[in-house]
Image (tube, rainbow, N blue to C red; front, side, top):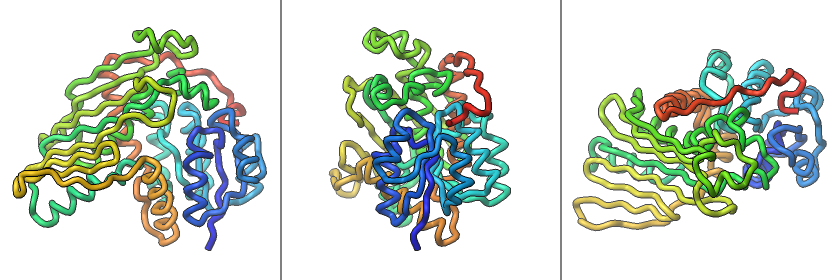
Length: 352
């Protein structure tokens, strides 16, 4: 059975290049698109041959989709999420859920009480490093995880202006920059790996105003974090280090990422398309192909739709995203970063 999907916030930079093609490949049919997320929403509607709506609420009233793909400015995300929860619509909701965890806490609690299906594409959980670790744990070949390092460093922030999402360059509408946009993947990976409470031991952030090469562009708010690092520790002692940044000297998509786990009995490293596993038995490293970010997004779309159709829970849900955002808030605080005040928008301006 084909699933009809309406797209909220079709101007988001992930809409046309990542989410929509992957959902179509997974068997869904796009039926409408609305403004929001950035400047390219109408172009998205033309590209995929669907009706365009300036107001996503009117779109949802008119087309009555089976499922929703929702993407919003970080500042708008709580209002969009609340609307989907009010309507009880199943969805894929692009991270984050707001500028800070408190923005979405009550909405997430309501969705949880309703048993509503909303999946969040924190796609790096689909790195084969986690499967490799789980397989060895199941066979009794490794013990506890000692430490882990997760890094996502992408190109310079000006690329968001090129993509028509200028709001990503202002912490009033995007929150703590790279920490919220990219670091959420790294923090979610660590939270999922340890499955227990996390303490923020230390953190540091550098802002656009501190870096001449970034500041020179003139379009980036000086308080926007463009690099952040933190040391985390789980309740049982596992140490995690995370890095996030917009500091690769390029305007191209992608950059430098690494998913590294050191466990008792195995050292696993997923980097640059290769999964390397070092074990004491063979005293060597076995290398095999890893997956790309695009492949992980495709896998997420297929799994998210399949699990919804079969009545299962989402592969990654709102509570997972909220948990990562709670840690991000504490990392930002530990780094001494404070956000400028958010803009004042009327309800009619939200994601329209």
